[in-house]
Structures are given as C-alpha cells and as structure tokens.
View 1 (cartoon, rainbow, N blue to C red):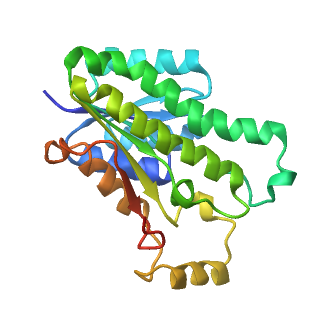
View 2: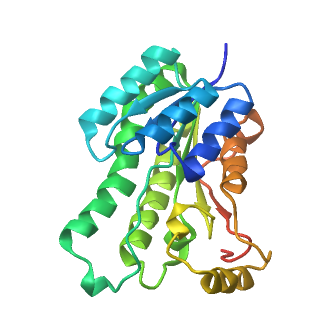
Length: 241
C-alpha cells in the first residue's frame, strides 16, 4: 500500500517542493490550496496528486478537506502543515487588528484546524507523522515582524505540546523552522538586501524550497520514528539555538 500525505499550502514555494519530494518517493499526495488554483491544479496534474481547496482559517472547510483526503486516499500516513502568510515589514504599532487576527487565523488556527481534523484517522491506526512549518523568527523573533514572529512562535509551542499528547498513540510531531528561503515571500527584497542576507548566513547562501522539503520528508520516514517534539532549523546557520 502506498504511503499518503496531506500538505497544506502546497501550490507553490516550500509547499510545492515538499509535494514534489514526497511524490518522487512514490507517496500519494493530497495538495491543499486556497487561492492559487491554477498553480495547484497544474502541480496536481504533474504529480498525479489530489487537489483540495479550503481556507485553513475556516474549521468547517478544513474538516471537509480532511474527510475527502481520507476518503479518497484511504488513510493518511503524514500531515504537513505548511500554509501560512506574512505581512509586509512594519512596526507593531502600525499593525491593524484585522491584520493581526488574519496572521493568527492562517498561521496558528490553520494548524489547529488541520491537525484536529486529521488526528482521528491517525489515532485509529496508531501511527502517523505530523510536521508543522514555523520560522526562525518564531524561534528568536524578528524586528518589524512581530505578528509573524508571534504566530510562528505559537506554532512551535503547539508542536511541542501536541508531540507529548499523541506520542503514546504512536504519532510523532515535529516542527521545521526555515530561515531565509528563496520564495515569493522574499519578493520584496532587492539584490542589495539579498546580498546582505547571504553575507549574514554562515553557509554563504540563501536556502531553497528543496532544502526545506528534504528535512520535512526525512521527518516522515521510519528512520525518524524516535524523533518527536523537536524544532529543526533550516537556516544555513543564521540562527543557532
């Protein structure tokens, strides 16, 4: 029986790279997307994957998505909670209530909704791997990124608590915290900014989505079955905790 995975926020960037990594290893992939329909459907065709649309901030939509994933794939061996958003750089006093709540609704509520919807099928099988995506700013905080840092810090705390809760049921839960990765979230940066970021990274380069995907995939392998509750930094040494 093929292994199966549901990946949220999988239409582009890190999520798409994660989907490609699992598909390349023969996994059946359920691709979640919200707004990037054309990209998601093209990737689903490329990977022969199952596209599923939902707003992760809406618990009812997420429950329906998870139910369809389980019904269509038969079961879920792994869940990757990658869906997330960031605000433009700005001072915390300039952040509106709606922006603050939206960042938490997607980045934190979205993880909660998805995990809660998927857990029953994993608990029934007494096995499963869950990987959440945080950020190095969730580990140490980023100036002018207070809402994003706070939300990603919450993802880390959620992961550590959940790992202890479900470990007796044979489910491992870990978090990957990327650093500066070349995705659409870096579109604001000019070449001088990118050069400065490279210089500040001990490995001397920016990360790629594939760098993150390899770690996510590894955490869902049998060789990682004794790893749970951990935060794995993929940041080139930019942050070492």
